[in-house]
Image (cartoon, rainbow, N blue to C red):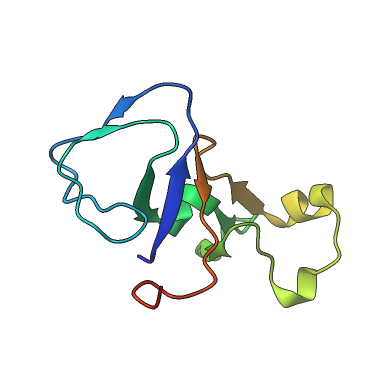
Length: 111
């Protein structure tokens, strides 16, 4: 799964699980402290930050498809309204609201 840098924008400190590491900040430096403070950065899987899209067959005849990261639809469904997409079986899973992606102008290591 692709990892992207994200900034923690929650309202209080959080403790990262000691079983989930190793953890890296948004610049790729390994974190020693497992406490994340508001404004700190963390490398996270992109689906956790940006969400993902699924397409389920309403008749349950075909397997479900993961469409992609963020809100995505198949090309033939571009331009449809949300209620039409839901009727076709789309589900849009939102990312975590306590993290925001950090947009970079240069790849890591090229700064």
